Image (cartoon, rainbow, N blue to C red; front, side, top):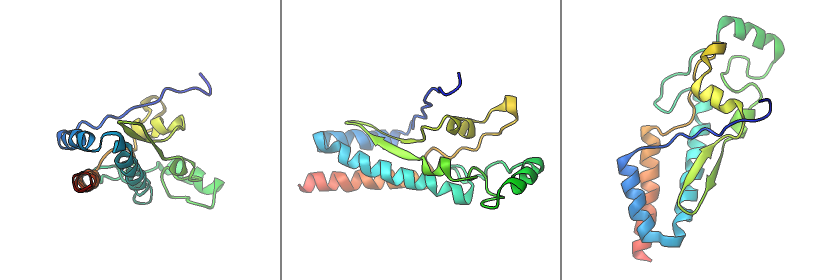
Length: 155
């Protein structure tokens, strides 16, 4: 259907993070969204940093643009003629986070965001993942959790 889309969820199944989050939830109680908000802000920033490097969360380069597409792109625009996924920065600028009482999510509400994340083989569009946790992101999340745990214990 034109104009409609189904939200795509990528669940992080990481035992270390899940265990740390459970400890944090017990320690912080109703203040848990404060820590989750910080995680969301950090992960939005980490996601946005993948666009200039044109890499997925594991550091692998996104599939290059085809020569045919590059030629047509260079004719149409002067900004970002060689960059992947940043024609006019709409996707990049749409990355946001949302915090609930016991969860945080980040991503885009743009319908084509899922197409770029997962690809669309029937249209010969490769996946160029930009959402997910890198090893550095995992450390960042754990650092935020531990910082908030320490503050909850001290306070």
